Image 1 (cartoon, rainbow, N blue to C red):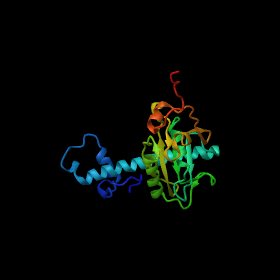
Image 2 (image 1 turned 180 degrees about the vertical axis):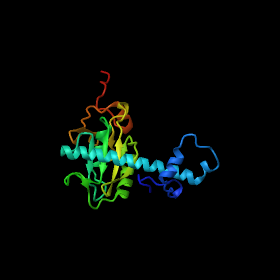
Image 3 (image 1 turned 135 degrees about the horizontal axis):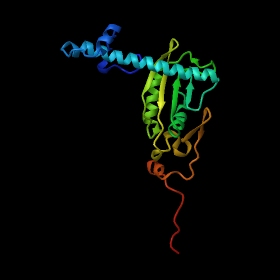
Image 4 (image 1 turned 60 degrees about the vertical axis):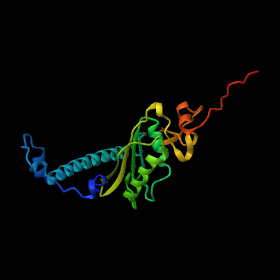
Length: 219
């Protein structure tokens, strides 16, 4: 996989673009020739874009971590987990809470107890795959977002930006817990169960649940 954790297209690893090659690719007025569209330069261009994305994500993760280290705690829009033993069960709660609010950032592979440093024993590949499965199959509605493996301080972390869900589609909940037990909202740096009384009509339609309210029968 490339530096951002995405699998290369076609199962081949893109060629590494040198600074001179990147300058050539980005030069204004570059003549359009057979060489300009050759597979080598196409792979070089793709590699350059991936490298730029990786560098940007490293800066974004570094900025989030610096913010948490200064505060000594997680802000309400960021959740970190060491995940050294695999994907924690509570991750679904955080995904639900972010989707039901203003969105947020999930960073796996960081130890809060150790000052937001890389967690020893963290395996990014399996955790990323497990997170992708949870987002697509374990949440209702599914969480849409790019899950990246990002280099950080001589280690790697798994990074996901969770977008806020359209209010018409809320609540987002953990399927295994059901709409009543698996809907959460962010409160401070933690997740709190969302009280659904009564369950929204759109959610009743998705889950097949029926309202307890009954119309009075004829007398």
